[in-house]
Image (tube, rainbow, N blue to C red; front, top):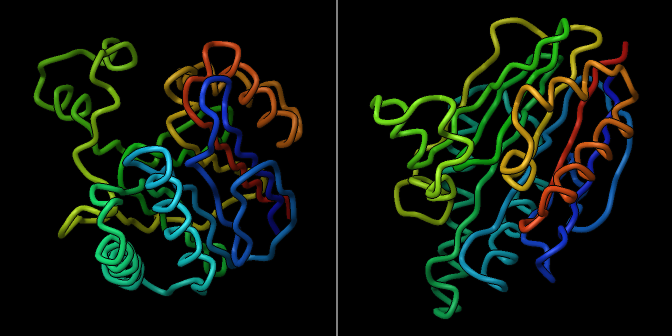
Length: 249
């Protein structure tokens, strides 16, 4: 059994929310949502790209497609679903609405089937796991800054403050995009907490700081609300989406 809490917030600068999240068949594009789920589910966050209206539409298309999809058995199924079905819907919309050309979306999520987790993502929305007082990133951004770091041009300490950290190299809506998907080698454990978030959180709060919030041992709602508030206090120039999934059985 899993306890779920998610919140998506417009932030303190923007007037519309291009973020959102989906919990099985429930799409949330404003406010919070809390529930408990058994051992199989799909949960994902999406962050729209391409301008005020286009980004909002793109993330909505991504989330709505996820809401109609049952948990999948293999990494191949997950990739096919996102690379073909979701992409097809985005391209179909762009064809009928040329003014949205260039729109896209990130996605980061978990496909859980009988407590076995598959992590999938495109872009710079992220998935983490908190276990034994340690926050572990389970995704790696498809961004220019990540490329610069991998090639040795910048240091780890420079990534958070880099002026081009928001430049993406991969997002849904681009032709022939490849999704990252991996099955975790072991089923989830009791007290594991998974964090799914958009860059509206990670642009303002470093990984070690997020870890410290988990170490307070608050319930997941209080933890998520605290992370949301600190991101807003530090600027909140982007939309912010945070979803926490805790195995409680």
